[in-house]
Image 1 (cartoon, rainbow, N blue to C red):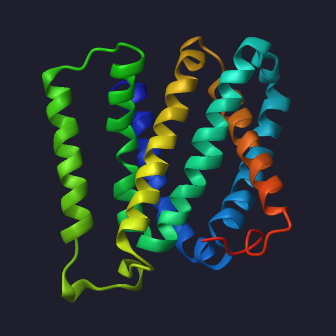
Image 2 (image 1 turned 60 degrees about the horizontal axis):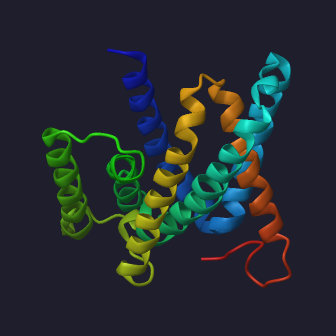
Length: 217
């Protein structure tokens, strides 16, 4: 199996585990505060690698703005909406909704970049949408109730947050795609994207608005 498919499977596995591990802390801290702490930690680790490896030199001026914009939309907006959805719908439903970022990215690539969609790809996108709808509305049995399955607040509001999170992630990926295709070090690019998200989240939670610093959902 090619390395890219393995990377995609690994990323999906990490996202699934993240949803399970984040349920408690995200619920306690709130989406904004939890995501800020998470992004600061990741930015620090990636920053240490980029400095040690010297790959920071690949962050040339022509790639900065696409990566900055990609980080703002995909990390700052997308991740915050994802953890808002997680707090409202639980890890199973939020993970299912967020999985729509892949078909959304495919559709955006077709609309914006002129990429070709085969008949099989269109059928796959349709099946993914139907599967998400069924899993959200009918994906549990009364005999398998768990605290993670409790819907907090209106279902439609949590679903909207999840869909917007998937859309933001897809747009962020689409913006970064030409830069990544140029062969830039992926960890250096990720460091810049995450750093943008961490900076915006820190600035937002420092505003003198009640609830932003801790629970904001």
